[in-house]
Image 1 (cartoon, rainbow, N blue to C red):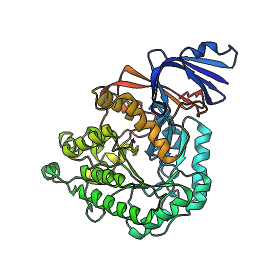
Image 2: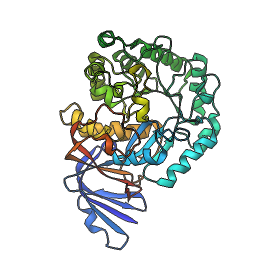
Image 3: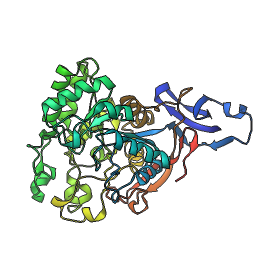
Image 4: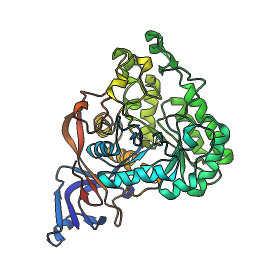
Length: 433
């Protein structure tokens, strides 16, 4: 099988490439890239040509933080619907968190996820294994057998690893398998009962506040543990980082040589706690960590621009409509994001010049591949031909009613945006959804 993606603007930060060229794929791998080389490929019945004129071609986008709910909560999302949502949003791969039912803390659950994803084959699925058995925070999971089965990282996301001793052991043991430990950074004592950011708008609404310090304290603790017990190979990643101070702690730790990375979400980059007030307590503004202050948001934008933040991830967290249609304090945390992330970033980050397109591809493709140690993030010769094609000029209106995901819980419903994905390719095969 051969594919030529002809005449697109190829943006690949891994090669410092941003120019109009052809991309040639043979048997699922990149076989060449250059101006006019597509015309030299011999015509045959096995040749597919995709006209990318006026379009942008990038390494396949990777969302390293999603919740696909299967097994156990298929009424919220399934692997099939989640991967269809990923492809529709321009993602060729996702890394899914372990808070399923049963928890992904064993070989059997990991293998089920991988097999189910292969059955649908619309996007790649990389399972993340639980740090602790049952996400109970007491006993380290069977890391070795999960690593053999295919997990790409460890995380109890949905909950923090509260125990300092357990986090120490996770940082030590994960080195044997070159797995990054991903932390949902929250001090549960400081954040107890909180449903939105503690500040002016929690006072206005009368809702219990969740202070930024709950995140900062946990990040500070973990960075001490990483420095003392992480050794030369220990790696630590802060999921959905949301505060100015946590970002400063990560930046300072990195300057001292610690192997620490972090991600931000589109909602923390674009919205603040004022949205809870202005939306009249819409439960689609309830997520954890909560929407923070404008000061925090501006710090995150600066971090995305200057490289302090490594990744943008959606934290895709679908819930059934009935679960969200309750009082704010009773609703579950989380929103969907697979089908909105790319367009939001193109329209609200790239178009106004907060970052350029190459930087966005780094955040959504190159860095996630590098941190997780998975194929992708590059279109260099011999690379796996996972490709995203996007249009910078196409206008789109986010319509949750048309999402491929089962989840409709988004604060961005109805937003009019410019820029979207128009195609994805897995190993050179165009994905049809």
